Image (cartoon, rainbow over all chains, first blue to last red; front, side, top):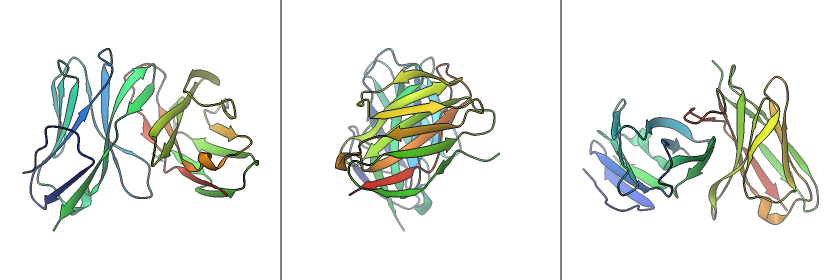
Length: 111
Length: 114
């Protein structure tokens, strides 16, 4: 599967591969993080979240990893499907309920 | 359960006009936040409302304002529109204002200022 160590604005993978999308966050005091998926013409859709007292959380075909030492988040998508094609954003809760978003990664899944 | 709804979905205005956008949160959600999304700046926080009170505000000029009603529905207003206000305006709702509550987004209102 595809794996990137740094944030990239685009990621292209083959159907069935595993995808890894990376994100760096800014505030070491942030304690809640969310991954969103945004398809063209739609609002961001919640995928998975993680709190700072955890370093890994799994959902259906998705896993989020949190490395607080280097302020890094990653989203792993297993067996990527064409329907996974979208822009993926990480977000950190920085002040109250305010979300600060990363730049986003456009994931393209090739059949 | 119905998701977050926003009206209108699309809007075209001219410079100098004002606009009001509406957001209905998920039933039972009492916190509503607004975000602006543009290709250049990405997703940026505008403000958050809970119990009809603005709890948090982003770094936007005073032309951007909002309010929340007793039924948790929210509106945002932009006065004296500028070309740069063209954007997708997103509303998100959550159960409450406490940290760690998942925010769910609506489909957005696409505003074009000519």
